[in-house]
Image (cartoon, rainbow, N blue to C red; front, side, top):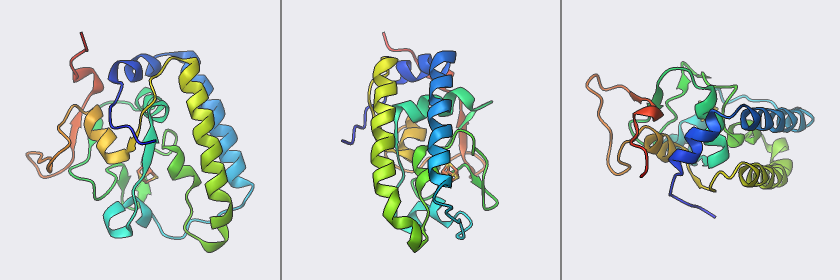
Length: 178
Ligand code: SF4
């Protein structure tokens, strides 16, 4: 189920909770091992991170976002629009350790198509369990929209930075809910 609301306070709290971060890290390590067992090969050099030209979207849960925030040093990058991920730079992902589940499971090659659906479903179930355990409200939304919400920016319309590049803001700059 897609949910556009983002539980900012829960995300901030979990991103600073060592037990939460350790549990998500362990889950992602086991997910990576499952993916590796299929010996997939990436040949498109980040074309799938350019969502508009590639023709797909990336969706993430609040659990993945909290983990992403917890491991991101410095400011978060808000995408200028929905067309590409701002964390792909020079054809490479610069946030590999904390990248979302979809980035880990998706491979475009034909021989990788048969296992991705089941693994994604099972991963979403595990993420939901972790969210329940740490009382992190469920959210599931498009990645660039989530990044823009995390950076405290409006979702509608393009974001224009003074230099034309991505906007950087900290989650700590967001007002706390009363
Ligand atoms: S987080 Fe990394 S792998 Fe995922 S869309 Fe962005 S650049 Fe690509």
